[in-house]
Amino acid sequence: QVQVVESGGGLVQPGGSLTLSCAASGSTFDIYVAGWYHEAPGRRRERVASITPDGSTDYADSREGRFTISIDNSKNTVYLQINTLKPEDTGVYYCNVVPVVGTDSWGQGTQVTVSS
Image (tube, rainbow, N blue to C red; front, top):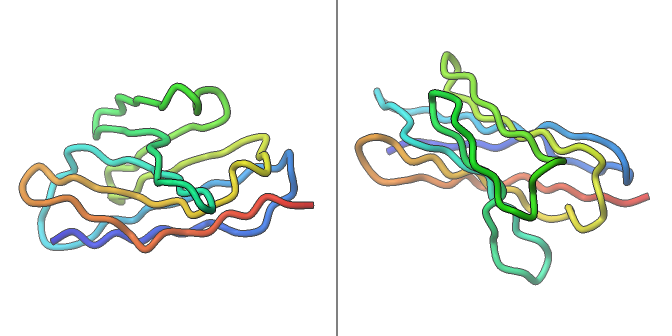
């Protein structure tokens, strides 16, 4: 089982930037795909972006432009940079890691609050 831990959230003013981290660990595994999801207050969890170990990315249509997903394979860590933060970016950001073998894993999430 892969363990996933997100970090990097916090309180940010509108227009600011933030980089979230998702660290995957466990017994020997290879990442098939990893993704970031956003759960705004009172709304369902939505996918923001996904990435594979070769760096191929896929963004939800509504997230292109201000969001950048990246991966450091040597650290099994996936990042999500969010620029020009808006109040609607508030919520819990979750990371999902799908290993080549086995079931996917979710982290506990990291809270992002965009407010002045």
